[in-house]
Image 1 (cartoon, one colour):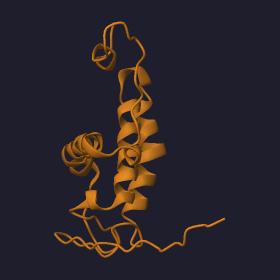
Image 2 (cartoon, helix red, strand yellow):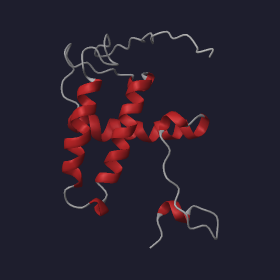
Image 3 (spheres, helix red, strand yellow):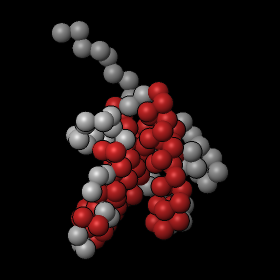
Image 4 (cartoon, one colour):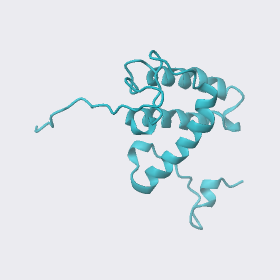
Length: 136
């Protein structure tokens, strides 16, 4: 049986391409990865695992504007795809919940996390710590 990734490759190629982490992508590849992540967040993650937004559990309505949130959610989504695949076995979803979901959501929704200062319906841009370049 040929996977969708393999069937999309040029004739004669049988090597499956591994997905790249979103922080390594740019341009149209980044945009497509963010679009697919957004669909998963909007239609699965938030409806099932979103919980109420409070001052002790913030969520930003424009989460995609927080690079840390995008990175964390993309990693969570990649793990979801792998661990909910039938090939992962019957315990795959339990492993995803235990090893990925709880930690990532706690980190994102921590009052001092990437959404600190964001409120329902309101995004607040964050200022990253400044660093000087090493001139070695």
